[in-house]
Length: 440
Image (tube, rainbow, N blue to C red; front, top):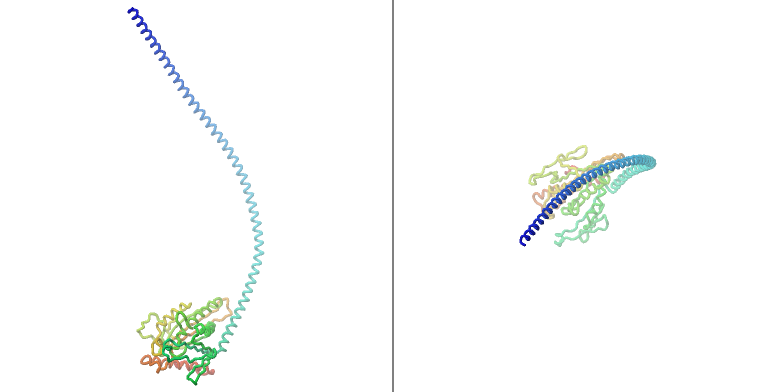
Protein backbone atom coordinates (compact mmCIF):
# COMPACT_ATOMS: atom_id res chain seq x y z
CA UNK A 1 0.00 0.00 0.00
CA UNK A 2 2.70 2.49 0.74
CA UNK A 3 4.27 1.89 -2.65
CA UNK A 4 0.96 2.37 -4.35
CA UNK A 5 0.43 5.56 -2.40
CA UNK A 6 3.85 6.81 -3.35
CA UNK A 7 3.23 6.02 -7.00
CA UNK A 8 -0.06 7.83 -6.89
CA UNK A 9 1.52 10.83 -5.23
CA UNK A 10 4.27 10.92 -7.82
CA UNK A 11 1.74 10.69 -10.60
CA UNK A 12 -0.25 13.50 -9.12
CA UNK A 13 2.85 15.61 -8.77
CA UNK A 14 3.79 14.90 -12.37
CA UNK A 15 0.27 15.77 -13.51
CA UNK A 16 0.42 19.10 -11.55
CA UNK A 17 3.78 19.92 -13.08
CA UNK A 18 2.47 19.16 -16.54
CA UNK A 19 -0.51 21.41 -15.89
CA UNK A 20 1.71 24.25 -14.64
CA UNK A 21 3.96 23.87 -17.73
CA UNK A 22 0.91 23.98 -19.98
CA UNK A 23 -0.39 27.03 -18.14
CA UNK A 24 2.92 28.85 -18.51
CA UNK A 25 3.00 28.00 -22.23
CA UNK A 26 -0.53 29.31 -22.66
CA UNK A 27 0.39 32.41 -20.67
CA UNK A 28 3.42 33.04 -22.89
CA UNK A 29 1.29 32.52 -25.96
CA UNK A 30 -1.34 34.90 -24.60
CA UNK A 31 1.30 37.55 -23.73
CA UNK A 32 2.69 37.33 -27.23
CA UNK A 33 -0.79 37.73 -28.65
CA UNK A 34 -1.43 40.74 -26.38
CA UNK A 35 1.86 42.31 -27.40
CA UNK A 36 1.00 41.77 -31.03
CA UNK A 37 -2.42 43.33 -30.51
CA UNK A 38 -0.85 46.32 -28.72
CA UNK A 39 1.63 46.80 -31.57
CA UNK A 40 -1.18 46.60 -34.09
CA UNK A 41 -3.22 49.06 -32.02
CA UNK A 42 -0.29 51.49 -31.80
CA UNK A 43 0.25 51.19 -35.56
CA UNK A 44 -3.45 51.78 -36.14
CA UNK A 45 -3.42 54.82 -33.82
CA UNK A 46 -0.38 56.24 -35.62
CA UNK A 47 -2.07 55.65 -38.96
CA UNK A 48 -5.21 57.31 -37.62
CA UNK A 49 -3.28 60.37 -36.41
CA UNK A 50 -1.53 60.66 -39.74
CA UNK A 51 -4.84 60.33 -41.55
CA UNK A 52 -6.38 62.97 -39.20
CA UNK A 53 -3.45 65.34 -39.81
CA UNK A 54 -3.72 64.88 -43.54
CA UNK A 55 -7.47 65.41 -43.38
CA UNK A 56 -6.99 68.54 -41.27
CA UNK A 57 -4.41 69.95 -43.67
CA UNK A 58 -6.67 69.17 -46.57
CA UNK A 59 -9.57 70.87 -44.81
CA UNK A 60 -7.49 73.93 -43.96
CA UNK A 61 -6.25 74.16 -47.53
CA UNK A 62 -9.83 73.86 -48.77
CA UNK A 63 -10.99 76.50 -46.28
CA UNK A 64 -8.17 78.88 -47.21
CA UNK A 65 -8.97 78.56 -50.86
CA UNK A 66 -12.65 79.11 -50.12
CA UNK A 67 -11.85 82.16 -47.99
CA UNK A 68 -9.60 83.56 -50.71
CA UNK A 69 -12.28 83.01 -53.30
CA UNK A 70 -14.94 84.54 -51.02
CA UNK A 71 -12.65 87.51 -50.15
CA UNK A 72 -11.92 88.11 -53.80
CA UNK A 73 -15.62 88.02 -54.51
CA UNK A 74 -16.36 90.49 -51.71
CA UNK A 75 -13.54 92.82 -52.82
CA UNK A 76 -14.87 92.79 -56.33
CA UNK A 77 -18.34 93.64 -55.04
CA UNK A 78 -16.91 96.40 -52.78
CA UNK A 79 -14.96 97.86 -55.70
CA UNK A 80 -18.08 97.88 -57.79
CA UNK A 81 -20.08 99.52 -54.99
CA UNK A 82 -17.30 102.09 -54.48
CA UNK A 83 -17.46 102.92 -58.16
CA UNK A 84 -21.21 103.39 -57.85
CA UNK A 85 -20.75 105.56 -54.70
CA UNK A 86 -18.13 107.63 -56.52
CA UNK A 87 -20.51 108.23 -59.37
CA UNK A 88 -23.25 109.22 -56.90
CA UNK A 89 -20.89 111.57 -55.01
CA UNK A 90 -19.88 113.19 -58.28
CA UNK A 91 -23.54 113.74 -59.11
CA UNK A 92 -24.20 115.15 -55.59
CA UNK A 93 -21.17 117.48 -55.88
CA UNK A 94 -22.40 118.67 -59.24
CA UNK A 95 -25.85 119.31 -57.79
CA UNK A 96 -24.33 121.16 -54.79
CA UNK A 97 -22.20 123.30 -57.09
CA UNK A 98 -25.21 124.12 -59.20
CA UNK A 99 -27.21 125.00 -56.05
CA UNK A 100 -24.45 127.21 -54.69
CA UNK A 101 -24.07 128.93 -58.05
CA UNK A 102 -27.78 129.65 -58.20
CA UNK A 103 -27.84 130.70 -54.50
CA UNK A 104 -24.88 133.03 -55.05
CA UNK A 105 -26.62 134.48 -58.08
CA UNK A 106 -29.79 135.07 -56.05
CA UNK A 107 -27.74 136.53 -53.13
CA UNK A 108 -25.78 138.75 -55.50
CA UNK A 109 -28.99 140.06 -56.96
CA UNK A 110 -30.40 140.68 -53.47
CA UNK A 111 -27.16 142.33 -52.37
CA UNK A 112 -27.05 144.57 -55.39
CA UNK A 113 -30.55 145.80 -54.67
CA UNK A 114 -29.87 146.16 -50.92
CA UNK A 115 -26.53 147.87 -51.56
CA UNK A 116 -28.16 150.34 -53.88
CA UNK A 117 -30.77 151.11 -51.24
CA UNK A 118 -28.15 151.25 -48.47
CA UNK A 119 -25.86 153.49 -50.51
CA UNK A 120 -28.77 155.80 -51.22
CA UNK A 121 -29.57 155.88 -47.50
CA UNK A 122 -25.89 156.54 -46.64
CA UNK A 123 -25.68 159.34 -49.20
CA UNK A 124 -28.86 160.87 -47.81
CA UNK A 125 -27.51 160.55 -44.26
CA UNK A 126 -24.21 162.18 -45.25
CA UNK A 127 -26.06 165.01 -46.91
CA UNK A 128 -28.28 165.46 -43.86
CA UNK A 129 -25.25 165.26 -41.55
CA UNK A 130 -23.38 167.84 -43.59
CA UNK A 131 -26.38 170.18 -43.59
CA UNK A 132 -26.90 169.63 -39.86
CA UNK A 133 -23.20 170.24 -39.18
CA UNK A 134 -23.23 173.42 -41.22
CA UNK A 135 -26.37 174.51 -39.39
CA UNK A 136 -24.71 173.63 -36.07
CA UNK A 137 -21.62 175.67 -36.92
CA UNK A 138 -23.85 178.57 -37.86
CA UNK A 139 -25.77 178.29 -34.61
CA UNK A 140 -22.49 177.87 -32.73
CA UNK A 141 -21.20 181.15 -34.15
CA UNK A 142 -24.50 182.86 -33.37
CA UNK A 143 -24.50 181.50 -29.81
CA UNK A 144 -20.96 182.73 -29.33
CA UNK A 145 -21.84 186.18 -30.65
CA UNK A 146 -25.07 186.40 -28.62
CA UNK A 147 -23.41 185.12 -25.44
CA UNK A 148 -20.56 187.57 -25.57
CA UNK A 149 -22.87 190.41 -26.66
CA UNK A 150 -24.98 189.65 -23.59
CA UNK A 151 -21.90 189.72 -21.38
CA UNK A 152 -20.93 193.04 -22.93
CA UNK A 153 -24.43 194.48 -22.41
CA UNK A 154 -24.42 193.34 -18.79
CA UNK A 155 -21.10 195.08 -18.37
CA UNK A 156 -17.59 193.96 -19.16
CA UNK A 157 -16.79 194.80 -15.55
CA UNK A 158 -19.11 193.00 -13.16
CA UNK A 159 -19.06 193.48 -9.38
CA UNK A 160 -20.54 190.90 -7.01
CA UNK A 161 -20.71 191.26 -3.24
CA UNK A 162 -20.54 188.34 -0.81
CA UNK A 163 -21.01 188.69 2.95
CA UNK A 164 -19.44 186.01 5.09
CA UNK A 165 -21.16 184.77 8.28
CA UNK A 166 -19.76 185.78 11.64
CA UNK A 167 -17.11 183.36 12.89
CA UNK A 168 -17.17 181.68 16.27
CA UNK A 169 -14.72 184.15 17.81
CA UNK A 170 -16.94 187.10 16.84
CA UNK A 171 -20.05 185.42 18.20
CA UNK A 172 -18.37 184.60 21.52
CA UNK A 173 -17.05 188.14 21.96
CA UNK A 174 -20.57 189.56 22.19
CA UNK A 175 -19.32 192.75 20.54
CA UNK A 176 -20.36 191.87 17.01
CA UNK A 177 -23.77 191.94 15.40
CA UNK A 178 -25.17 191.48 11.90
CA UNK A 179 -25.68 194.95 10.37
CA UNK A 180 -26.62 193.83 6.85
CA UNK A 181 -29.98 193.60 5.13
CA UNK A 182 -30.77 192.25 1.67
CA UNK A 183 -33.90 193.93 0.30
CA UNK A 184 -33.20 192.73 -3.26
CA UNK A 185 -30.97 190.29 -5.13
CA UNK A 186 -28.56 193.08 -6.04
CA UNK A 187 -28.78 195.36 -2.99
CA UNK A 188 -27.17 195.48 0.47
CA UNK A 189 -28.27 197.83 3.22
CA UNK A 190 -25.70 198.41 5.98
CA UNK A 191 -26.79 199.85 9.31
CA UNK A 192 -24.12 202.30 10.49
CA UNK A 193 -25.94 203.48 13.62
CA UNK A 194 -29.48 203.82 14.91
CA UNK A 195 -30.25 206.65 12.52
CA UNK A 196 -28.05 205.92 9.52
CA UNK A 197 -28.31 203.20 6.92
CA UNK A 198 -26.37 202.97 3.66
CA UNK A 199 -27.62 201.20 0.55
CA UNK A 200 -25.19 199.65 -1.96
CA UNK A 201 -26.09 198.20 -5.35
CA UNK A 202 -24.09 195.48 -7.15
CA UNK A 203 -24.57 193.18 -10.12
CA UNK A 204 -25.36 190.37 -7.66
CA UNK A 205 -25.35 189.98 -3.90
CA UNK A 206 -24.71 186.78 -1.91
CA UNK A 207 -25.97 186.46 1.66
CA UNK A 208 -23.91 184.93 4.50
CA UNK A 209 -25.62 181.56 3.97
CA UNK A 210 -24.90 181.48 0.22
CA UNK A 211 -23.19 178.39 -1.22
CA UNK A 212 -20.06 178.21 -3.33
CA UNK A 213 -22.13 176.82 -6.22
CA UNK A 214 -24.41 179.87 -6.22
CA UNK A 215 -21.41 182.20 -6.49
CA UNK A 216 -19.94 180.18 -9.33
CA UNK A 217 -23.18 180.22 -11.34
CA UNK A 218 -22.71 183.98 -11.80
CA UNK A 219 -19.07 183.49 -12.82
CA UNK A 220 -19.72 180.55 -15.18
CA UNK A 221 -20.63 182.66 -18.28
CA UNK A 222 -17.19 184.27 -18.19
CA UNK A 223 -15.53 180.84 -18.46
CA UNK A 224 -17.51 180.29 -21.66
CA UNK A 225 -16.32 183.67 -22.95
CA UNK A 226 -12.74 182.67 -22.17
CA UNK A 227 -13.04 179.48 -24.24
CA UNK A 228 -14.60 181.61 -27.00
CA UNK A 229 -11.35 183.60 -27.13
CA UNK A 230 -11.90 186.54 -24.74
CA UNK A 231 -9.50 187.48 -21.95
CA UNK A 232 -11.14 187.17 -18.54
CA UNK A 233 -10.03 188.26 -15.08
CA UNK A 234 -11.83 187.18 -11.91
CA UNK A 235 -10.62 188.39 -8.53
CA UNK A 236 -11.78 188.66 -4.93
CA UNK A 237 -11.35 192.04 -3.25
CA UNK A 238 -12.04 192.88 0.37
CA UNK A 239 -10.82 193.52 3.88
CA UNK A 240 -8.48 191.02 5.50
CA UNK A 241 -10.44 188.11 6.95
CA UNK A 242 -13.49 188.72 4.76
CA UNK A 243 -13.32 185.29 3.09
CA UNK A 244 -11.60 186.03 -0.23
CA UNK A 245 -9.40 182.92 -0.20
CA UNK A 246 -12.39 180.79 0.81
CA UNK A 247 -14.39 182.14 -2.13
CA UNK A 248 -11.59 181.72 -4.67
CA UNK A 249 -9.93 178.49 -3.46
CA UNK A 250 -12.18 176.93 -0.84
CA UNK A 251 -11.42 173.80 1.20
CA UNK A 252 -11.02 170.40 -0.56
CA UNK A 253 -14.57 169.38 0.32
CA UNK A 254 -16.12 172.67 -0.91
CA UNK A 255 -14.01 174.16 -3.68
CA UNK A 256 -14.37 177.75 -4.73
CA UNK A 257 -14.42 179.75 -7.94
CA UNK A 258 -10.95 178.72 -9.11
CA UNK A 259 -11.43 174.96 -9.33
CA UNK A 260 -15.07 175.19 -10.37
CA UNK A 261 -14.07 177.48 -13.23
CA UNK A 262 -11.37 175.05 -14.30
CA UNK A 263 -13.77 172.09 -14.11
CA UNK A 264 -16.18 174.00 -16.36
CA UNK A 265 -13.28 174.83 -18.64
CA UNK A 266 -12.38 171.17 -19.19
CA UNK A 267 -16.06 170.25 -19.54
CA UNK A 268 -16.38 172.79 -22.37
CA UNK A 269 -13.24 171.35 -23.95
CA UNK A 270 -14.83 167.90 -23.98
CA UNK A 271 -18.18 169.21 -25.24
CA UNK A 272 -16.48 170.95 -28.18
CA UNK A 273 -14.06 168.11 -28.95
CA UNK A 274 -15.55 167.51 -32.40
CA UNK A 275 -15.09 171.14 -33.51
CA UNK A 276 -12.05 172.52 -31.66
CA UNK A 277 -8.74 171.26 -30.39
CA UNK A 278 -7.84 173.10 -27.16
CA UNK A 279 -4.51 173.26 -25.34
CA UNK A 280 -4.23 174.77 -21.86
CA UNK A 281 -1.17 175.96 -19.93
CA UNK A 282 -1.00 177.21 -16.36
CA UNK A 283 1.18 179.57 -14.36
CA UNK A 284 0.87 180.61 -10.72
CA UNK A 285 2.55 183.65 -9.18
CA UNK A 286 2.28 186.04 -6.26
CA UNK A 287 2.91 189.76 -5.93
CA UNK A 288 4.49 190.30 -2.52
CA UNK A 289 5.70 193.75 -1.44
CA UNK A 290 5.67 194.81 -5.11
CA UNK A 291 7.87 191.82 -6.04
CA UNK A 292 6.75 189.04 -8.42
CA UNK A 293 7.49 185.46 -7.25
CA UNK A 294 6.94 182.17 -9.07
CA UNK A 295 4.76 179.85 -6.92
CA UNK A 296 5.41 176.76 -9.04
CA UNK A 297 9.13 176.53 -8.36
CA UNK A 298 9.92 172.94 -7.38
CA UNK A 299 11.94 171.96 -4.30
CA UNK A 300 12.38 175.54 -3.19
CA UNK A 301 14.34 176.12 0.00
CA UNK A 302 11.80 177.97 2.16
CA UNK A 303 14.58 179.64 4.11
CA UNK A 304 16.15 181.06 0.96
CA UNK A 305 15.03 184.38 -0.50
CA UNK A 306 12.55 184.05 -3.35
CA UNK A 307 13.75 185.07 -6.79
CA UNK A 308 12.22 188.33 -8.03
CA UNK A 309 10.84 188.23 -11.57
CA UNK A 310 10.43 191.18 -13.95
CA UNK A 311 7.39 192.09 -16.05
CA UNK A 312 8.26 192.77 -19.68
CA UNK A 313 6.17 194.02 -22.57
CA UNK A 314 5.90 192.05 -25.82
CA UNK A 315 3.77 192.26 -28.98
CA UNK A 316 1.46 189.67 -27.42
CA UNK A 317 1.09 191.54 -24.13
CA UNK A 318 2.96 191.52 -20.84
CA UNK A 319 5.25 188.54 -20.19
CA UNK A 320 7.31 187.42 -17.20
CA UNK A 321 10.60 185.77 -18.27
CA UNK A 322 11.50 182.79 -16.09
CA UNK A 323 7.93 182.15 -14.90
CA UNK A 324 7.07 178.45 -14.76
CA UNK A 325 4.40 177.48 -17.31
CA UNK A 326 3.08 173.91 -17.31
CA UNK A 327 0.56 172.15 -19.59
CA UNK A 328 -2.60 170.97 -17.84
CA UNK A 329 -5.09 168.42 -19.16
CA UNK A 330 -7.55 168.18 -16.28
CA UNK A 331 -8.49 169.33 -12.80
CA UNK A 332 -6.11 166.84 -11.18
CA UNK A 333 -3.17 168.53 -12.88
CA UNK A 334 -4.40 171.96 -11.74
CA UNK A 335 -4.97 170.79 -8.16
CA UNK A 336 -1.43 169.45 -7.93
CA UNK A 337 -0.07 172.80 -9.13
CA UNK A 338 -2.36 174.76 -6.77
CA UNK A 339 -1.18 172.68 -3.80
CA UNK A 340 2.42 173.35 -4.73
CA UNK A 341 1.69 177.08 -5.06
CA UNK A 342 -0.13 177.19 -1.71
CA UNK A 343 3.00 175.84 0.00
CA UNK A 344 5.12 178.61 -1.52
CA UNK A 345 2.71 181.51 -0.94
CA UNK A 346 3.41 184.15 1.71
CA UNK A 347 1.02 184.09 4.68
CA UNK A 348 1.14 185.61 8.14
CA UNK A 349 -0.97 186.40 11.18
CA UNK A 350 -2.16 189.54 12.96
CA UNK A 351 -4.94 190.59 15.30
CA UNK A 352 -7.65 190.37 12.60
CA UNK A 353 -6.67 187.14 10.80
CA UNK A 354 -4.61 184.24 12.09
CA UNK A 355 -3.84 183.01 8.54
CA UNK A 356 -3.81 186.14 6.43
CA UNK A 357 -2.67 186.13 2.79
CA UNK A 358 0.23 188.56 2.65
CA UNK A 359 0.41 188.60 -1.15
CA UNK A 360 -1.79 188.75 -4.23
CA UNK A 361 -1.90 185.35 -5.99
CA UNK A 362 -2.58 185.11 -9.74
CA UNK A 363 -3.44 181.75 -11.31
CA UNK A 364 -3.34 182.15 -15.10
CA UNK A 365 -4.69 179.68 -17.65
CA UNK A 366 -3.72 180.24 -21.29
CA UNK A 367 -6.02 178.77 -23.93
CA UNK A 368 -5.13 178.11 -27.55
CA UNK A 369 -7.92 176.65 -29.69
CA UNK A 370 -7.64 175.53 -33.30
CA UNK A 371 -10.56 174.36 -35.46
CA UNK A 372 -10.58 170.75 -36.61
CA UNK A 373 -10.98 169.79 -40.26
CA UNK A 374 -14.69 169.13 -39.78
CA UNK A 375 -15.21 172.69 -38.50
CA UNK A 376 -13.33 174.66 -41.10
CA UNK A 377 -15.77 177.56 -40.75
CA UNK A 378 -14.58 178.36 -37.20
CA UNK A 379 -11.61 180.55 -36.34
CA UNK A 380 -8.66 179.89 -34.05
CA UNK A 381 -8.80 181.46 -30.59
CA UNK A 382 -6.25 182.48 -27.98
CA UNK A 383 -7.06 183.95 -24.56
CA UNK A 384 -6.06 184.17 -20.91
CA UNK A 385 -8.06 183.48 -17.78
CA UNK A 386 -6.68 185.14 -14.63
CA UNK A 387 -8.04 183.88 -11.30
CA UNK A 388 -6.81 186.24 -8.58
CA UNK A 389 -6.92 186.05 -4.81
CA UNK A 390 -6.02 189.52 -3.54
CA UNK A 391 -4.47 190.16 -0.18
CA UNK A 392 -6.86 191.90 2.22
CA UNK A 393 -6.97 195.62 2.71
CA UNK A 394 -6.05 196.54 6.29
CA UNK A 395 -6.44 199.34 8.79
CA UNK A 396 -3.19 199.50 10.67
CA UNK A 397 -4.99 200.65 13.82
CA UNK A 398 -7.02 197.40 13.90
CA UNK A 399 -4.31 194.90 12.94
CA UNK A 400 -1.61 196.35 15.24
CA UNK A 401 0.90 195.37 12.57
CA UNK A 402 4.54 196.24 13.16
CA UNK A 403 7.86 195.56 11.49
CA UNK A 404 7.60 193.25 8.48
CA UNK A 405 3.81 192.94 8.84
CA UNK A 406 3.49 196.75 8.73
CA UNK A 407 5.61 196.91 5.58
CA UNK A 408 3.43 194.19 4.00
CA UNK A 409 0.22 196.03 4.95
CA UNK A 410 1.46 199.29 3.43
CA UNK A 411 2.40 197.51 0.16
CA UNK A 412 -0.96 195.74 0.07
CA UNK A 413 -2.97 198.91 0.64
CA UNK A 414 -0.95 200.83 -1.95
CA UNK A 415 -1.42 198.13 -4.60
CA UNK A 416 -5.16 197.83 -3.86
CA UNK A 417 -5.53 201.59 -4.16
CA UNK A 418 -3.78 201.42 -7.56
CA UNK A 419 -6.14 198.60 -8.59
CA UNK A 420 -9.11 200.79 -7.64
CA UNK A 421 -7.76 203.56 -9.87
CA UNK A 422 -7.44 201.11 -12.78
CA UNK A 423 -11.01 199.85 -12.34
CA UNK A 424 -12.34 203.39 -12.11
CA UNK A 425 -10.51 204.33 -15.32
CA UNK A 426 -11.79 201.22 -17.15
CA UNK A 427 -15.34 202.05 -16.10
CA UNK A 428 -15.03 205.66 -17.18
CA UNK A 429 -15.22 207.29 -20.56
CA UNK A 430 -13.39 205.88 -23.54
CA UNK A 431 -9.96 207.37 -24.01
CA UNK A 432 -9.40 207.80 -20.27
CA UNK A 433 -5.81 206.96 -19.29
CA UNK A 434 -5.62 203.66 -17.39
CA UNK A 435 -2.76 203.78 -14.84
CA UNK A 436 -1.65 200.15 -15.17
CA UNK A 437 1.97 200.88 -14.20
CA UNK A 438 1.25 202.40 -10.82
CA UNK A 439 1.67 198.96 -9.26
CA UNK A 440 2.69 195.50 -10.32
